[in-house]
Every structure is written in C-alpha cells, then in structure tokens.
Amino acid sequence: MTRYPALVALIAGAVAACGFAPLDLWPLLLGGLIVLLVLVQDAPSMRAALWRGWAFGVGHFTVNNNWFQHAFDFQNKMPPVLGYFAAVGLALYLAVFPMAAAGVAWRFRGRRADVAYVLIFGAAWIATEYLRARLFTGYAWDPLSVAWLPVIGVARMSAFVGTYALSGLTVVLAGAIWLALRKDWRLAAVMVPVTGAAALSAPLTRAPEPAANAPLVRVVQPNVSQDQRGESDGPLLLKRLTELSGRPGPRPRLVVWPEGVVRDMIEDGYPDWAYFGFNYAPPFWTRRQIASVLGPRDTALVGGTALYFSPDRARVASAANSVFAIGRGAQIIGRYDKAHLVPYGEYLPMPWLLKPLGLARLVPGDMDFSPGAGPRNLRIPGFGPVGVQLCYEIIFSGQVVDRARRPRLLFNPSNDAWFGRWGPPQHLAQARLRAIEEGLPIIRATPNGISAIIAADGRLVSTVPHLTAGAAEAPLPAALPPTVFSRVGNMLALAVAAGLAAIGVAIRRRRR
Image (cartoon, rainbow, N blue to C red; front, side, top):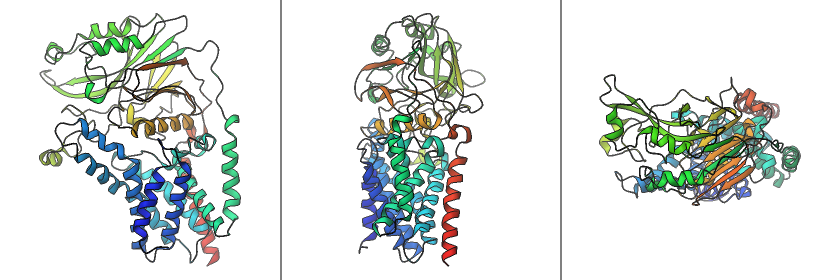
C-alpha cells in the first residue's frame, strides 16, 4: 500500500480520533479503521502487523487523550511540560491493545481480504477493548462505540450488545465498506442495512416523557476552575453554590452539587484537631448552609471528603472521595465512597518506586484515597434508590449499577476542571452511553462543565455549557425497563466476540 506503512498507520489512528467528541466527525473513525484493516492485511509478517497496529494506537490515543496533558498544569510538584510526555507515554501503553487485535487478525488472514478476516478482526477488537478496561485497574476511556452518539439510534444498540461489542461491530462495518469497495458486497449487504435501520429507529427508541408530577432534579455548576477548588472556606464558593441551587417548590427536588468544590468537612464525630487544625468550618455549619436551600421534601447530594483515623485517632490514616446525602434538617441520610479510584489522581501506584523518582499525584494533596465497596444506592425520600458513580467510575461499562438492587437513576458528580477542553465532552459522551446501556437517567454535576441531565435513552434533556456558571433543572426523566445489557452485562460482549470469531474461523477452514 505504501513505502511507509507505520507512518500511514500513525496518521490513520490520529484521524480516527477525530471521530470522537468534541469534533464528532464519526465518518473519519470508519475511514481510519479501513486504513488499519488494509495495512494489517498487507503486512508481510506478524512483526509488521503488530508494528502497524501499535502505530495506529499511538496516533489514536495521543490525539484522543490530549486532555491528559492539562492535569499537569495544576501540579506544583512536577513541571507542566511533563504533561506532554505523559500523554504520549500513556498512548504508547494503550497502543498495545490495537496492536494485539491486529496480530490476531493477521494470524487468521487469508491470501486476500475477505469476510473471515474482517469478522476475526472485529472479535479481536472486542476482546482487547474489554481487556483495556480491566487490566491494571483499567482505562476504559473512549471505546469506539461512543463515537456513534451523534447517530444516536446506532449508539442505542449498546442496550442490546454492550459497549465493547458495538465497538467490534464498528470494526466489522468499516471492513464491510472496505470489502464493498473491492466488489465483495456480501458483508456490506448485512451490515449497512442493519446500521441504517438502527440510525433511522431513533424516534422509535426514545424514552417516554416523565410523568406530570415527577419530582425535579436541579444540577448546580458554579464554574470553578481547578486552581480555585477548595475555596469554600471563603465562604464565597459556598455562597455561589447555594445561590445557584434555587428555591423549594411543591414538588420534591434533588439538588446535586459537583465533586471537588466543598473543602470543609461534612461529617461530625472527628477529633477536634481534624477540623480546626486544617482550618475547616464546623461540619454542622456547612450542612446548615447546604440545607438552607432545601424544602421539607428536598434532598441535596454533595461531593465531599470523609476521613479515616489511626486507632489512637492521633492522625489521619486515609480518606475517601465521597458523596453525602443531606436532608432538610441538615442531617446526613446517606454516604457513598468512590470505589474505582483514578491512578495518579487519587492514589499513586507503586509509591516505593515513583516517589523517589520525583513523581506525585496529579491533583493537590499528598494523601491517597481508600476505595469504597463498589456500586451501591442511596435511599432518597421521594426518589427511591439513587445509584452513585463518582467521576471516572462512569466510564466502566457493566460496572456502574448494583445489579441486585437496580436504582431509579444514577448520579455522576465529577471534577472535569483539569480535563482541558477535550476531556469534558468526552466524559459526558461516555455517561450518555452508560444511560443507554442501563436504561437509566443520569444526572451529572461538574465544577465548570459540562453538567447535564441525561435521559435513559442517552438524550441530553438539559445542560450547563463548559466554563459557565448556572443550573439545569427538569423533571426527573423516566427510567426504562431493564435492558438486555443491564440483565446480562459484559457476557454479551464476550458472546458477540465468540460468535464473530467462530464464524470467521469456520469460513477460513471451509476455504482451505
């Protein structure tokens, strides 16, 4: 195809990344995948195929995760310029997964491009994308399927097969188009009509409108940048949050605040030095300020920090990134602790190795967080069970809901203030895909955007734009009946991968 296949693969990966938010040029994703399929098919050896797959991944993840560099702008222990190397370094690792998919596909390719090769490539992509979300705590950011949100009817297929399977089917669709360009129409005769029908089905797959007497949700976005976080002891920030929280009315309200903007302790029962030694306001005063905007049937969900102490209570042993449910009487009626912590953000992996090298966490503070127990619900009066997924947790397909106790909605407070301009729309897109998969509305609150009320079918009901102070209020969107994916989980993705691989291998053996 070219004298410089690895360079072409690198460029194709970068072009494919433009198919995701914020650009949403999804046809470029298909084009980039077609180039990858061609390059791997034409590779003269396994080594060449792996090299081309890895180059594609480096280009793709460097562009897609360019926001990662901005995290270093707020870390005074490491120079900001290190962020550029970190973004590329992350891409060098993530590229291993498309490299592995390329290697598997090359191993089973024929003498010329055919349906079997494309199906096996799709199956391998499902398996490697699933592994990317699992290995070393997982990094599930921007699977291929999230690029379909502008064509939301196709994105809604994830309710039936899951995120990772839809990613593999995206590879198959790209391969079908490529084969059709080579006058082999068989796969395109299946994939193109199915994809078109899914796209056109969007009006038929909308979630129902909320009931006339549905309770209200109000999402508060104070427009606080990363370097302003923790100024609630001002008390200007707390005043801004309460002003944006509105006033009670006849219907119950769920007022939600973002992660990372309330620095003062919310819980009672800590040693006195824990409050006054760190210049924190008394927790009851903070809760009273929050409760001042609530009516008798309202509840606030507020991001905060919980502390754990040594047995003698003489020092802080660890902390939890938490969400507190606060009632009208300023009482705490529930707490959720984040379970899936962010490496380098909320804890430093291998501190015995990295600290001597001068590396540190990317957000302020020296104390690592402790993980919570996993997906669980808060019982909120007037709303029923409310699931919580804190920030990064929402990107993990199949891991966001307590399956034994399905919630009425999911609350996803997040701190996207250190994600630059590309990170927030990408994060929002992944939350929308979780809503579709689970058939549940999702409420997102962030310090400076993008905050949103998301319907159970992935539609944006109301948003507060990036870098804007404001609030979004709407009746709570209706939940859908449990989706196929919500019942089966990622076994669906593995089943689709196995099916594609089995058909591909059967075709290959028959031709031999």
